Amino acid sequence: MNLANLFQHETDLQVLAAGETLFREGEKGDVLYVLMSGVAEIRVNNKVVEVAEPGALLGEMTMIDEAARSATVVARTACRLLAVDRRRFDFLIQNTPHFALHVMRVIARRLRRTDAEL
Image 1 (spheres, rainbow, N blue to C red):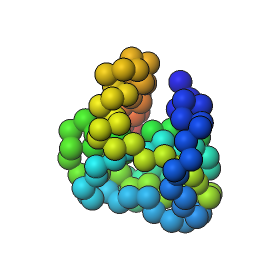
Image 2: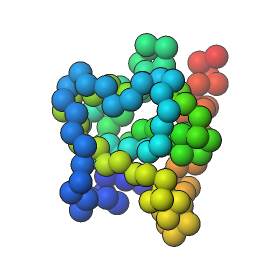
Image 3: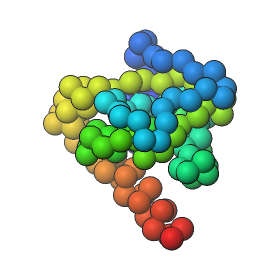
């Protein structure tokens, strides 16, 4: 599922220039982001662990456990992002089963990749 397609008609997007930080590891988070365009790096302990492309979820774990951010996200190129707050996230989870499964798959894929590296 490419979330950029699901939200293609959204107009209220956040813009980051190349090199700008979306959020930092350890910060409190209250929204997740859908990368609508551009490329971003997901960094843990200052190491790039994933290169995110359009449709990627960023910051989804904070919506599940409300803990501090586990990674830093930095724009590699100019990026446009859609912020999804708690209210909208809950609505999407309840009313769009494919969205809920997608979030779970993203978390599982990232966990499996981390396990493999350990």
